[in-house]
Amino acid sequence: MSSPTSDRARGSSRGKRAAERPPSRLRRARKVEPRPSTGPAAASPAEPTAGSTAAPAGRVADTTPRPAGPSTKVVALWLALLALGAVALVWAAVDGALTRGNGLSELFPVPDWLDGAGAVAVATALSWLLATRTAGRPLVSAGLALVLGVASVLVGGRILPTGAAVMTCVVGSVYAVMVTVPAVTWWKAVREVLVATLVAAVTSLAALGFEPTVATERFDLAALVLALGLAFTIVYRLGAGLHGLGRRGMITVAIGLVLLLATLAYAELLRRYGAQTFVSSVLDFVDATSERIGAFPRPLVVLLGIPALVWGTHVRARRRQGWWVCAFGVAATVPLATGLVAPDSSYLEAVLRAAYSLVLGLLVGYLLIRADLALTGPKGRRGRRAEEAGPHRPEPSRFAEL
View 1: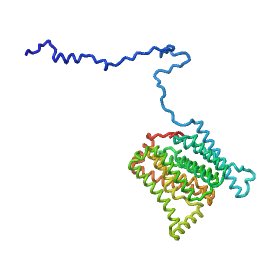
View 2 (view 1 turned 135 degrees about the horizontal axis):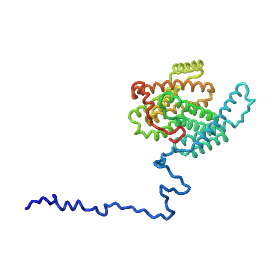
View 3 (view 1 turned 90 degrees about the vertical axis):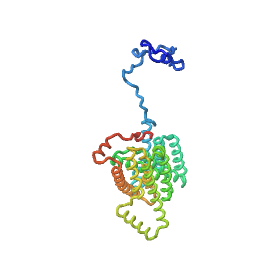
């Protein structure tokens, strides 16, 4: 077998032909030919058509998605309706207080239908705002609230006004939690708690405007259970379900549930089956404290509701699982919303009770934030300041759709 010569290319000629073979028709990229336009000739980039403005070179069209939800004018309209209803309720409440006092309300007479109209306006506005905030059907929710409110005012009785008052407390209490935004610092968390408290106060006036027939314990318990169910249903979507909680989140939710059930169960068992001497001593202590400072704070609001709002809004600035903590904030907004409905409570006592609960709850929330930062946050004051100044988890604005 002869060896290859020096002027002959190395390798097999078959392999050389395979390497030079053009690709098959199936593998060739088809050339897309431009279709002839049937309309007027398209203008070239250098020659824009008449009546059109040429885009500056190098500018890219703005494709940033706009936030979902209604326009600012529509939100302002419903907020104006809420404010108008609140003013009517405050006017009716002041007139009632003056009537029971010195009879000075004769100088400024108030129509009898004012409190009912204000309650219907507030309930309707709160229903629309909550549905808008949670990506629901605002018109359907507002329409149902309007029908129920008008029917309860016109028909009267015991069932319809009480049902309307419960519905208003539930919707207003949940919206008071949903209207909050993430808080990087404790002071911003205090601001969010004050916003939620303001919404709960307006809700309380609206519930009182329906003039319900109330058994205090049953009314509070029914509103709390319904508000918790609605809040956790909404938060299940906002907090990415149960699988997004993690071990730390599961422990936090479990502690909140145990504290809530323990507080409610202990109060009920103490009232029904507690020793008479022990119950009498507890009631005597509550009465003595109320006589000295005007009211006694609510333990559920101090130990669970306000701290959950403070810590939850603080956690939401970093993780969306903070919504699960904020859901327990209805343990504060519901008692605040039902504070004026109790027949054995005056306006002054309800305001003082809410103020004491708010101050003590904010202190407990501050301790929770400090403990959380000590365990999981950066060390030192500079590290905390750098974290506060850094980027945080974004959320829509206060009245935008979540």
